Length: 544
Image 1 (spheres, rainbow, N blue to C red):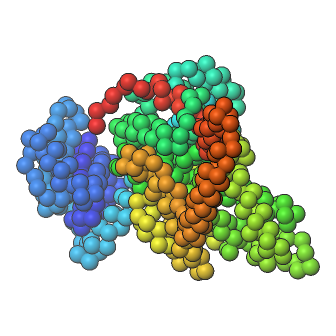
Image 2: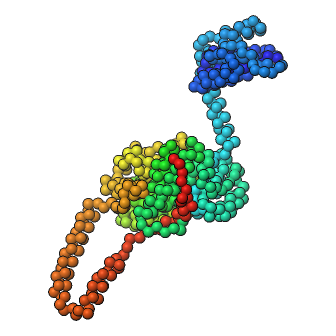
Image 3: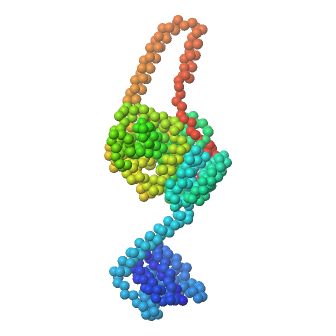
């Protein structure tokens, strides 16, 4: 039996002609067998060089044909190229090819397309065999407990994509993570290949395809805002190093939580520059809060409200834009089909409620973070991941924290929440939206806070300086001048009454004055949930 191996470049017309002639011979000759090897044009030369070196052959063109020695084994017997195979077929089998050059070129292009399609199918099969590696940091946080059932339901990555979940946290949380592993296995999810825990820093994010960064949990108290900002840097630096070192080259990182979300995202981008384009911050939590408040006001369902835009700092000074917001299936005198919608601002007749109460409620929720619990955080992260992999609903606006490239007049280099849409595995900023311009004062206030956070965290600035408009500065200067005037008047009165105070009581008056500064209310900042995870990493060094 004769077995020939025919290898060639996918777009080679001579390979196409040789292949068709070999197919004819195999079909009509009982003892003639062929094996085909097709390579992409860009890898053909390297592949051919390796084959020739291995078998000690000398051949430089496409195709290359050799005969396998089935009866006695050993290396193949080189026949040659296109011309040698045609001569062999003519001499041994009295068969010739009459294919025209034009037809050869057409078939060559068809071969290339078929080869690319076959490679894509093989890659898709590999993804089914190799599960998607999902890592969750600070896995002892409540959001993780609520996130796992959503990920294992198949709604996020699809029912045909198996996943392996790794829960990453410090050593103190190991017992809690073990119980979480048992509960996850009890789900018996068809898409869950495995669930495991990791408490060793050097093994973190090994071959990770998806990394979910949650709030780090600690009981360590931080007394100033500046210390709280700087405390984020070591952990983000460590995560960035580990992601660059261990994660898959196409890893996607999604940052959630309720404290300094924008800051953590921009720090991860700084310390993991190779995958900075694949790091995003979740803004759907704030969007969901706004929809729920509007729904309660309108006495409708929050899911019927669409296109709420969140601008700026997700967990801080942001701007909720309702100019594009619409409500569907709203019960009123005007009724329409399911796709019919009405602008929300046209249905809320109390404009003062929007300007004052609505803003005050959202500001209180953002400042305290009390309503942004585990369920909302988990749902926001899962929905954003679903959009990232499968696309957002057509025509719907989604808010997302991404690195600014100057869109909408936003300064470059800061992570800013803005309107986007998801498609083809990535996001597109909706810069073509009309009537979404933001006033310079509001934009400056939001960007100033984000820039200040970044500068203070990186040590380029000592104190955080909140933005103050010219109006606020004028009011402040006016208050200071009034205080100075009042103090001078009090000094004049005090000098006039000084002689009326007995000597033994003068010390009491001075004592009260000295204690007065202690009665001034001090500004306090919310105690961060946790830095204990960071404490476990203190003293560890990494080589960049």
